[in-house]
Amino acid sequence: MTHQTSQLFAQLGISHDPRFTTTGLPPDRVHACKSAVDGSTIATIALDDAASYDATIARSHAAFLNWREVPAPQRGLLVRAIGDEFRTHKDALGRLLSLEVGKILQEGWGEVQETIDIADFAVGLSRQLYGLTMPSERESHRLMEQWHPLGPIGVISAFNFPNAVWAWNSMLAAVCGDTTVWKPSLLAPLTAIASNAIAQRVSERMGYKDLFTLVIGSDANVGERMVADRRLPLISATGSCRMGKRVGEVVANRLGRCLLELGGNNAAIVDQHADLALAIPAIVFGAAGTAGQRCTTTRRLIVHESIADDVCTRLVSAYKQVHARIGNPLEDGTLVGPLINARSGEGFDHAIAHAKTQGGQVLIGGSRVAVKGCENGIYVQPTIIRAPKSNQLAISREETFAPILYVFTFKSLDEAIAMNNGVDQGLSSSIFTDSMRHAELFLSGSGSDCGIANVNAGTSGAEIGGAFGGEKDTGGGRESGSDSWKAYMRRQTNTVHFGKTLKLAQGIRFD
Ligand code: NAD
View (cartoon, rainbow, N blue to C red):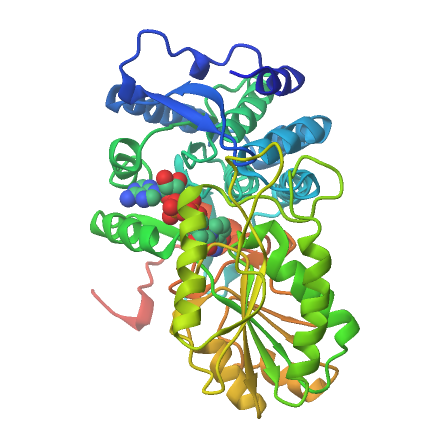
């Protein structure tokens, strides 16, 4: 482990995690963790095999049998203490996260803040896991629903939110009476080791072991095993549509439950009534922030033809300022850090080459950037590509996980909404307008078909209070706020008869 990594772990109060002992292990059980900042190896960790995987699930299941008996408000107290521990360690954890996946520090800290926020939300929820009561059609009968703990929850997370996505799941799962088994991405295991250790040490302090467990390994050895495991009644998986299709199929085959949070291809509409002073910075953050590596990144811009040239000119000028601040994400003032790895860089190059051959015009960007001191990191210029007059640009139908914004034009709002909806994914969407009619049409049942639809706010940067997720190939799952907690519990309908004569439903007589 490098000095920088071990210092961060020490600041997090984690000195001897067994994951860091790799001596004597066969090579296929040892993983070199890379920093996206400069491509260097920052730690070496032990991976799970079939036996250690099985043992972890067994421990998680045993912990569940105990945890489900603890009253929900008491479970909330534990989650409150975990949230406080993340508050205390926000700085160091945000730094570790940024070092590992290359988010700028502001975003690293912002992600840990999301974990703190969802813990707060879950604490409140621990007193609000309400069931309904319904009027029974039979006299002297009570009809009601209760929500019970579900079991150990399998959480599979993507590299780009290596802390918050686990927290969205595990903090809710914990107050619902479930334990969590987390399989992080092999591109971001260090943040997972640290986050899980923080949650686990708080629970051990409060007398509960194994509420939060980790399995780390390849998709073939650990991921596939987990998805097929009947001991995990719910698999909550975040990642690409390709992964979701596979996970969905395997879990459906064992009639388990899936919560899928998959890729997006998000559009922002800018109509002729938009306040551009507000729209431009929101679009720039949505498209270039996190180097285009958010599921909610703005990838398509749909602009009214009367203002398209003006919008493009303003965006190009804003992008010039952003280009001047591409660099080491751990340094002050950087706005755009690296892509996660070389494969992402190839995806960026490939998309730009395709866009050009399909008639797209690069307005700004399109190139790699060399960052001093980070020569092995993959840095690229946030890029704007204007679609040809035909508005056809096949490459824009794919989610390229990089900062590329494709610009299209429209004449009527119906046409803009059809373009917004005209891709396979359905995660996030926005309209920038001062027209109340346009805003309401966009939010109506015949408007945006996405799980998230915003007015005068960008596609990225959701708050935890709302349910988060998307439709179509984005998978249909909902996580985080609102009533997303219901996915982590099993619903039971109860009929209680307190009369003396048996009464059958539907008026049936059987005497
Ligand atoms: P990915 O699909 O490559 O990997 C995601 C996770 O799935 C990893 O932990 C990976 O190991 C695991 N995985 C892959 N195949 C598996 C299998 N067969 N069985 C079990 N596990 C398997 O995605 P990524 O590159 O890490 O992340 C980027 C993608 O995630 C983008 O498409 C992005 O839009 C999406 N994402 C979606 C959301 C959302 O909430 N909708 C949030 C973040 C990221």
